[in-house]
Length: 205
Image (tube, rainbow, N blue to C red; front, side, top):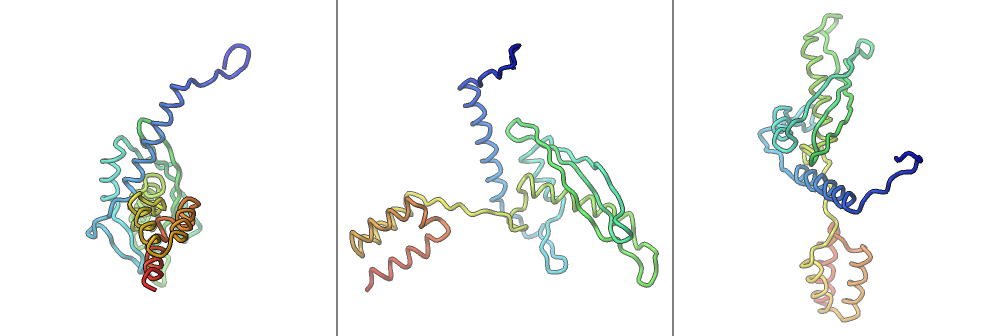
């Protein structure tokens, strides 16, 4: 902002540089999200899959070097759980980013008593759970395990060509119809196989 209080315009060069950085962020997160978590690091508890924190730290070290974790606040939620508020800091294509997360872990007591089984372990588990949630939420680590992967809906040139080729086997009118459906996004990556199979059946009649 200059002395007159007006905002200086952003140069085209700056806009281009920003776009490149943001594109790099998107590409990095897509790469990490698509990583298949080795089965050796996937565990199960109460029929729910989860990933060991050591593996998530390893992926964070490789793809987001320089990250850090800070516990902002901890507290007991009544007598049943321990709550952690943590903060993850990391670098994305040169940009320093910050994301907060909270998690609660149930406090284990000996049956029929008010005596803790292992309070220290419960506190440690609450922090670990919080860190893991942040790794997944902000870095896309273990998206395959936590069901956060998003399939690409864009068709490849080959997929479009295959659709048109099979549609031509039905009729030129059908090929034109399919081309319009592709352009309007009616046929996309998620329903491509079904659309192609349907066209093949129509061509066999």
